[in-house]
Amino acid sequence: GAAPHRLQTHNIAMHANGWFKVNAYLQSISHENIFAAGDCVHLVDHPQTPKSGVYAVREGPILIHNLQQYIAQLVQGNKTTPMQLKSYVPQNDFLRLLNCGDGTGIGCKHDIAFKGAWVWQMKHWIDSTWMKKFDVAALRKQQKQ
Image 1 (tube, rainbow, N blue to C red):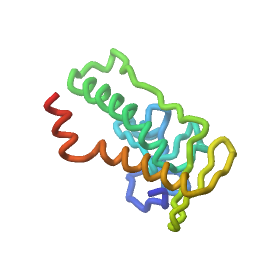
Image 2 (image 1 turned 90 degrees about the horizontal axis):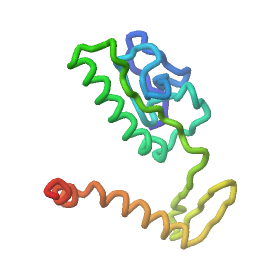
Image 3 (image 1 turned 90 degrees about the vertical axis):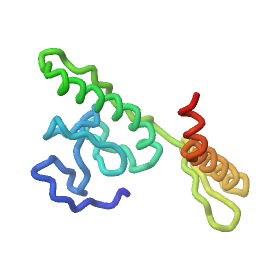
């Protein structure tokens, strides 16, 4: 989670809160062979980015691409050809939804707040739809296609 990390880092650049400092390529600013994403990172080019799963999810494809590029360069042993790394640029705003535990929810988007049972229902639908993507049966079905 977004709590400070207390890891032995062997001089890897860290934020005061214990997050790994990464550049726009999600690459450590002190060690080019280390990549990271999600709540454990501090984006030095976008320091105000909140710790939220919304950002981690969008960092994922960028991280995968950049890792593939880095590994391909290692395997080929070709350091003269520059890697085609992709930059991550966080979105400006995102939908925040919280379950109040009483059948209602609260939310906020573009500084507009809202509350009601419909908010909880929307959150439940979004969360359920997202989790279904990772259902083992659904993943196996995808692999066969």
